[in-house]
Each structure stands twice: as structure tokens, then as C-alpha cells.
Length: 337
Image (cartoon, rainbow, N blue to C red; front, side):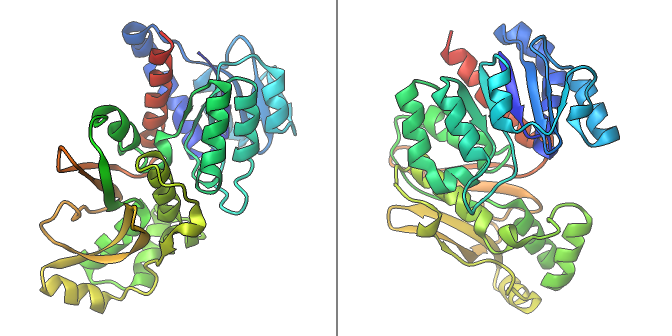
């Protein structure tokens, strides 16, 4: 399978690491060889129809910061759309930064690849939260696969789980923790009794929170994931503007301490149901499935046949998120056999 990898930040580098680690395993177990024929970052691209060495890509990125410095294959200042025209490929893996204003460049890249009859795998939330129906319908019209397991919960297997493991069940609602940064902050405030401001600073120093943490702490990231779950699992036609959102920036250590004394924790919860699309801090019991710590994500799916089923997984990390991208690539390969 020839891959165009659009974006080479943390997740893109995770994809390269996973390909390097797993290609022999994939050949042996699935007859699948993943070949990177193009990789882009903000500097330009590296393009080779014969395939790029993932380890060399990682080395060059680490040492120079630019994939366009790849020997004999680097091209400076070329945009992603032009890269897709310069190389023969089977699947575009799109891992550019999330943009919740207009979904770019992910939206344009995805539309071009789909119209060119190529399969697409993405970890991006922005274009899905804003234009989910449009993109799904376009993929159906063109008869291609469009997969996005990595867009919700990192390594937590929720989309494929719901669609492939519970296909006979009607899923009535989903309630869960969909953002690892806020869960880390609230967990540390609970354990240490520290203030929100202190704990956010600690999370930033550890690289868990962004320099600008707004999307995470104000609940926007979890709201994007709520939209994706609502559309893909419950069939609710919605976009980001349909979600009620309250973040965690006003949660005090006193409120957390009071909840603890009553046997509760405060968590940023996402609710997905026909009656409610909501992201907000809620009280959960200390011994409940929602009492997960650190950067873990979890979700409980309420079904008609299996009652409640809970999934838990790491919600962040480059290799962890890349593992979800790999599962989509394998599923595309298996569907074509």
C-alpha cells in the first residue's frame, strides 16, 4: 500500500515509527507492505515513488526540522495539494494540525484525495467536526474508504469497536472522558490538592498541555469528538455549533475537595445522545468506570442488547495515536482482499 503522509508533527512521526516497527509483522500476518511515497511538513515534502526510509525521515526531521532536506527526494515550499498530483499512491494519511475555524488544510486535502478515488485515513478532528456529512457522502459517491479511528480518543478503540464489534446492537447513548489533558489536570488536582493554574502549568511543563491550552481546557477538543461520535455511531446529523460546551478553567481545588469528601470526582464528561450533545464538568462516583486517572480516555456505550459496554485507552501520544491509524490501514487492506 503506497501512502502519502500529510503532516509530520508528533502523530506523523508516530506513523513513521510504527511503519518502521511493524512492516515485517504486517507482511507476515496480512501480506501488507506499507510504503511511504510522499511525506509533507511546513517546509515542503519528500517524494519518492520507490519509497522513503521511515528511519531516515525521522532522523532528518529530528536533526534539521525539515523533511524537505531528505536526500534527492526533498522539495522545498510545495503545498500538499500539489504533492498529491506528483506521486502515485493508494491511501492518504492526513495528520495535519486541527483547525476548528474552517477545517483547513485537512478539508481540501481530503476532498482532493477522495475525488481522485483514493482512500483516506485521518487523525484530524477539525474538518470532521465542521463538515462530517459532506465528507462522508463524498467518500460514498466516489466508492472509497474514509476512516478516522484516531480522531477520537487516540488509542482508545471506540469507532471500530462500535461498528464492528457491536454491529447487532442499537447504541442509544455514549458517556465518556474524551480529552486526556483535562483528565490529567483534574486527576492531579484531586491527588495533590493543587490549584487549576498550578496544575495547568505542570501539565504544560510535562508536554501534556499545549502552550495555548484553550481547545483542551475549554472543552472544544472534546466537543469535536462528541460531533464525530454523534454522526458516526448514533447517526445524529450535527456539527460543532450543536454541542453545549463548558470547560474546566473555573474548577477550584475547593470544589474538588468537597466532591471527594462525598465520594465523588469531578471529570470533564461528554454526553452523546439524541436528547443531548454536551461537554461539561460532572460529578462521578469514585468507584465508577469513569474514575480513570492521568491521560486515559474512556467511554461507556449504552446498548439495547449488551447493556453498558465500557472502553478505556490512552487518549494521547504519537505512537499510541498512530496505532489507531494503523488499525484503519489494516482494515482498508482487509476489505479489499
